[in-house]
Every structure is written in C-alpha cells, then in structure tokens.
Length: 219
Image 1 (cartoon, rainbow, N blue to C red):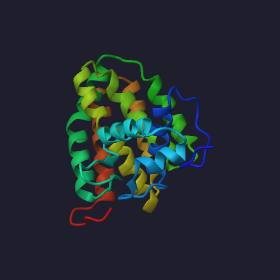
Image 2: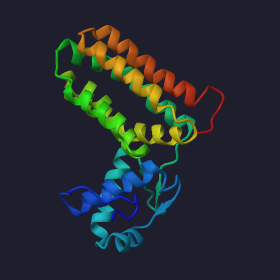
Image 3: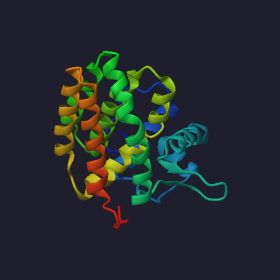
C-alpha cells in the first residue's frame, strides 16, 4: 500500500522511483502540506528503505521545484503563492505557445496529447488530473523540434502541476480547463498553428488571472 497517497503504486523500476512518485503524489494531493518538513530518517523508516533513495528522491523533487532544500534546515514542501504562480506562468506564456506553433508546423503526431486528455477525464483525484494535464501540455510542446526549448518547459512541469492542484482545492475548475484543452488540441490537429497557439495562451493566462488576480496574493 502507498504510504502517503493511500493507493497501491504501479510497477516501479527502483526504490528511489517509488519514493519519488509517492512523495510527488502526496504533495499534489495535499496529504503533504505546503511548508511541511520532509525528514530523511522518518521517510526512510516509513518506506522501509535506507536514507539514500530518500535523499536522491528529495534532490530530484527539489530540482523540479516541488520541495525546497536548505543547507541548515529540513527539506520542506514548496509553498504556492501568487508570486510563484505568476513567475511560472510568465515563462510559460512566453515560450509554450511558440513551441506549440512549431509542433503544429512540423505536423508532429499528437496522439500523446489525446491520451493525456483521456487520463485527465478518468482521473480519480487532483494528483492524477494535474499530472495528466501536465503531460498534455508536454505532448504539445515536446515535439517542437528544439530540445532545449522543451527542456526549459519540462523544468516547470511539476511546479505548474502543483499550482493547479492547490488552486483546484479552492476552485475546482478542471472541467473548464478540460474543455479548453480539447479546443486547443482540435485546432492543433487541424493544422492551425496560430489558432492553437492563441487558444493555448488564452487558456494559461485565463487560469492564472482567475486563480491569482492582481492585488490578491493569497494562494
């Protein structure tokens, strides 16, 4: 049984991976709270592993922005606030629509994006839905033909998923976002690069504006 998410994990390639995915799910479901300390010895005992897989998992999560590591303090779950969200979406708004334009211009297959939408529709909780949405966006920009651009956007994926999961706790707007995703994908599949990019920009800008209005710094 998954100790933090309450669900049995899928087949896992390594101890580090099972620790990583379980902590990630715990953060995205809210079982691990923003600001909560993640102590290596406690996690190792909970998972029945040595501290090494835990330490490796926490380093990976720090690299994706889900946890914060300090030289003198325990690792803590990342806190979502308006400034963090706006910074993430500022970068995404600059880069992601352009990446989608290139994906559509290259006539890259978009089957992975459709499959991600199906997973989001069938999701059992916020974590699954948020990760499926993350994968949907990745499937749009991933085939853009510029690996460096894709890697920059990949670096924001988990933080964007965390923002979505936190926002949905207060305002479960995923049905609206799902409709917008389907419209974006349809436009991309029709070969309309500019139309798809415009819808994607409006989709992301609308989400962050609704969730974090200017002048309101609460999560």
